[in-house]
Image (cartoon, rainbow, N blue to C red; front, side, top):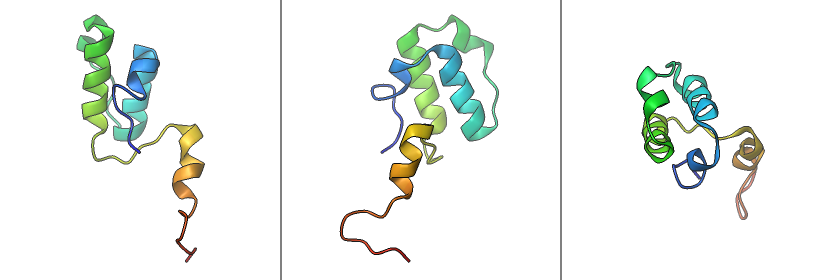
Length: 73
């Protein structure tokens, strides 16, 4: 599971989305995001997180848990 505009960024504020980008990439928000429409800002933030493997904190324990049929190492 990866955060996308549809499943995460479209449901949080622009400020939270920018906070997420900063946490995942070390990049701080661009002033352009402040003037973007919500859908455009969500898409921008989702693109910035591509390949980072960042997850919202409620999903982190699920990602760390072994999947069905897999053994712990």
